[in-house]
Image (cartoon, rainbow, N blue to C red; front, side):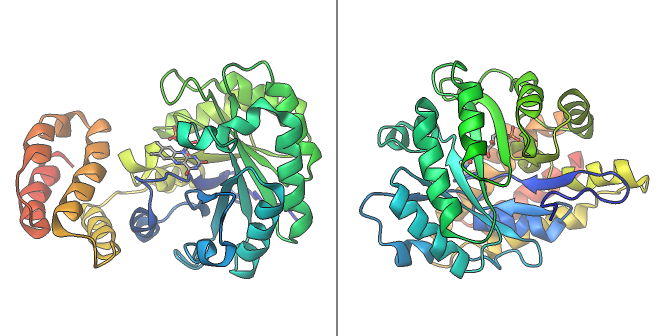
Length: 323
Ligand SMILES: Cc1cc2nc3c(=O)[nH]c(=O)nc-3n(C[C@H](O)[C@H](O)[C@H](O)COP(=O)(O)O)c2cc1C
């Protein structure tokens, strides 16, 4: 079965990236209200060595953005626990489980998970294999291009493939790169030439032009977009429109709905001030994609209101002027 089917018009399979913190449940729900992507990946569930598998698994809701599928992502370094967790995710309705081999956070890498797996291809292979063998649904992996450098790039790709994963996503920056230097799309092309399994291209797609350029330069099988979707929540529709030839008209009302869904999906126990700050965090991305909005950035982000509806009464008309 092709897990990354193209549309009949040639549009590649589009995935909303996992983004811990920014791309939480509220964000995914808001994005689903606009739509345009074929699948999303939940931000990682960290599986520490003392993990209580069943209670940890409750954080994952497979139908969170139904009918759009939501893959689960696991981050950990104990093969047995990761396999147990994979079983739990499958029983909770996951349609795919992704192994995180990219998180650069030092608290994570210090314990041998996330991007640390890239230091030891055989260990990456062992964990991925344990997960693959534990479940019947597809297991995939999301890799950076290396830890300190790309010296183990090829070994990591082949170790991941040998484990039996269905495909991999490549964010072509090393752990040391963080999010700084441009993503090296040439490495996505290289991965395509090395591997038999499909490769999802990821990193620095901010516009339709970028998406087309990545497809052209790398021949990747599908696209994953993270920050580009926070900067422009309509990006997936815009890519789809390019292929279908039917223009997509982004509507202000859809963006207002997006904000409303976002707000209403924040758990009730979250204090009002935190809600305002979450809204500001979300909006701070929108400024990056719009020069007219950039002029309003300071006014909006410095707005001292602790009440979220008062904040929106101020911010939305300002945003609308630049829409
Ligand atoms: C705030 C933030 C949180 C992230 N959290 C995760 C995560 O939980 N799991 C993961 O595999 N990647 C995570 N990433 C990496 C993204 O999924 C993606 O690989 C990276 O941002 C490059 O893609 P982009 O340029 O489209 O954003 C995160 C990125 C950001 C900016």
